[in-house]
Length: 90
Image (cartoon, rainbow, N blue to C red; front, side, top):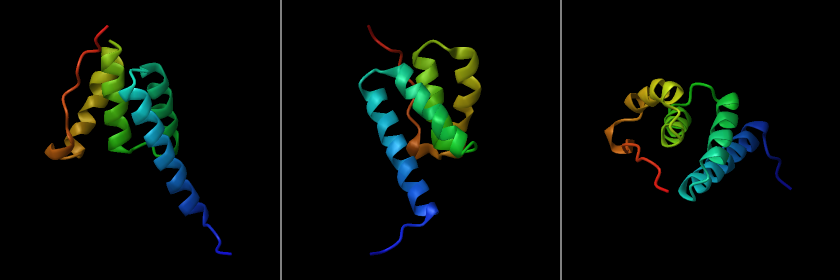
């Protein structure tokens, strides 16, 4: 039986959290996505993908004061990864 390192477990857990947040976001469950992205950032505070995704989630909810500064993380992602935020429709 092979052993799983703490690092491998952490990577798997983060990947699962990112997937859960992306699913919540796609399904317009922005409050849930926000909570998950915040949780991810407790583990990897400087992660530009998590910061950018949290930013777009906040902006969709109209939380501009907090969202716009985080949106600056898009500069760290490269142009291929950046998608402009879209206003949430009712």
